[in-house]
Structure formats: structure tokens, C-alpha cells
Image (cartoon, rainbow, N blue to C red):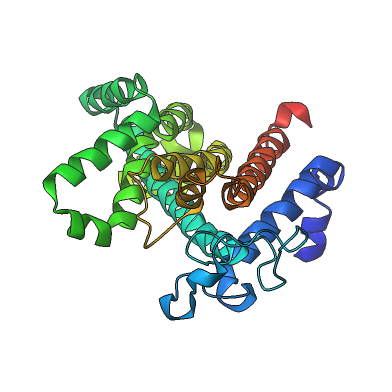
Length: 301
């Protein structure tokens, strides 16, 4: 199995692209640092008992007045910036992966139904998708988050803020996947293997899941990879505007917003390093998505 994978066209395409290999390494470093934060981070930045205001606003260790205990400096509450980035990256990645999973499941299910069943159901679902596509996805997510904030008390919203952000971003991203899956399903449903399955009496749901779905997953995988960076950026933007993750569950966007308050007073490291981590993560995922799109395109082989 491994030998066959190493001899595949996709692996040769990956090895032949230095930019893709570097992007993969950067993405793995970001993901590993976030997932292993409890073991790799110098400290727990959200353990209030370990924080000291005497350690506030320490510059990076290589600067004058730097402290080796804070490699990238500390913020206004004495939290280690490096540790805060690693823990904040966990929240950003969790929101990104969960939102992409939600949007992919919605898009796959609705796209398969629209393409295979057709008729009035297809028309209704696609018109809903068209209406949603007329608005930027970020505005849809902002609207959903705003409605939830208006309905729920502030303390309740803070407790479920992670779930709200995931749902808001996931719901805003399903139309592009649904339209792609619908187009591929329209092509597949008229092929001989689908017609043969219908003739022998295979149920429609089984045809969609066992026969059509595996043949439409290629484009969906590419879209999902590209949507991952978009979801991380959407969450960071929401948190930067103060309507995403609360300070008690900070993501990279929240850290950038907090650091922005001290930018003009000279504590540049509080916002610069979280911003650099966000750029590295999003850029590496985008480059991997671009490579995957080209690698799965038979016309470019």
C-alpha cells in the first residue's frame, strides 16, 4: 500500500514542487504546535494562578529588557505570547476544521439531493444557494452571530461562543460545495452504472451514497481544503471585531485584537507574532489547496 502510494502521480507531483513541500512543513509545524500546546508551550497562559502583572509587557528575549522565560515577550496580563499563540492556534484550527466539516456535509447532502432528485427540490435548493451567494460569506456569518447574540443572554452566548462561530461560518460556506456537487451529480446520474443500478432496483439513497458520492468527492476535497483557510480567516476577522471568540477562549484573531490596543504604545510584539502565525497558517493551507487542485486535475497531468 505504501509503495503504491509513493509511486502515485500525486506523490510525484508533491515531490516535484518545492513550494508545496515547504507549505506542508509549515502547516504541519503550525498544527503540531497547536495540538501539542499543553506539552510544548512554555506555560499555560490562561492559568490565572500562574500570571503576574510584574511580568507584563516584557519584550522578546533578544530585545533589551527581554526575559528568557518569555521567548516572544509577554502581554499586558503577563501571559507568554508564544504560549498564547499555541493555545490560540488550537481554537482557530478547531473552528476551521469543524466549520469546513459542517459546510462540506451540508453541501454534499444538499448537492446530491438537488442533482439526483432534480425537479422542484433542485430548483428550491439552488435558488436558496444563489440568494446566499449574492452576499459575502463573512456577512452571512456576522448576521448569524448577531442574531444569536440578540436572542441569548451575554453569559449564555459566551459559553457556547465556539459552537456559534462554527455554525455561523459553516452555514455561510455550503452553497459553493452544493453547486459543485450538484453539477457533478447531474453528469453521473445519467451514466450506465447508475442506470444499471436503477434497473435492478437499488434504492435511490444507496445509489447516491455508494455509486455517485465516491465519484464527486475529488472537487469537494479541493474546495474543502481551500475553505479551511477561509474559515480560519473568517473566525479571526470575527474575533478581531469582537464578535467571535471571547477573551476567555482566545483564538489568533482575539490575540491580534488584544495586541492592537497596545500597538501604538510600543508593545508591537503582542500583535505582530499572532498575526505572523495566522499568515503562515493560512498561506500554507492555501498553497496546499492550490497544489491539490492542480494535482487532481487530469488535464494538467
